[in-house]
Image (cartoon, rainbow, N blue to C red; front, side):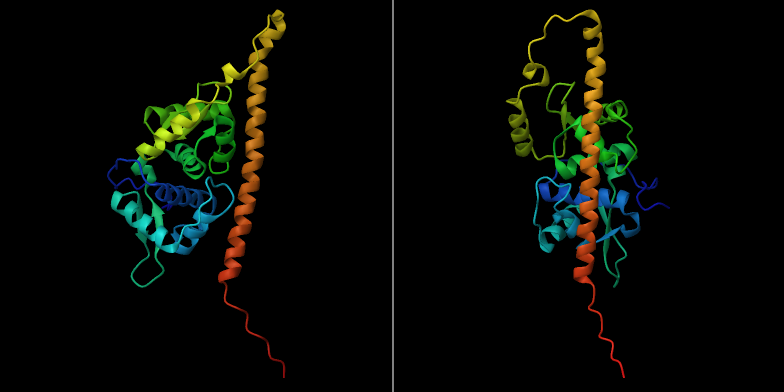
Length: 254
């Protein structure tokens, strides 16, 4: 059985807001399950490295092993994470977010990116989540966001349309109020645009197409940034592996 797929025998769990450290841990578990399945479930060291990596993370964190262990304890008690391969072997950890959140594979990829980077525009989110699950364009993303909004897992921070910003709903109450306040003062795309001038019929008719092209280009840029983030993450993981690798024994020639 695919270790990332939901267990049909596991009863459905209800999600709730969690601390910032817990959100980072959840996001990393999902990201690594989808992008490096051979290394999943994750050891504590691998999880800690993923939480503290400098690419595709906002904000940057510097968690300690104790921070990660305490977070895993909270998430296990909540039913969102499980420990596997214990009893003397290296303990590893996997997520139960399919059941805990009640989402499908593409929805979980979107949630993971929001957990890892916070509030984002649709274009940024599409490009970053597409590295985990296929999301062809913004038209493919929007029904996914609509489903997550209906489940209460995603909230809009700006009006729909160009530059639409969304966030996950797992923030703790005070954090969520601060997030809403930070975006409440930002001008909406419509308000920040120049006053519309009367345009000839063909130009006015072409405006929706131009807006669509702009959003697609924005998504493409986000995809390129995501690819660079993924490459940087692989380099980070490789360097961490070299750091923890045992030193080579010298070869004695006789």
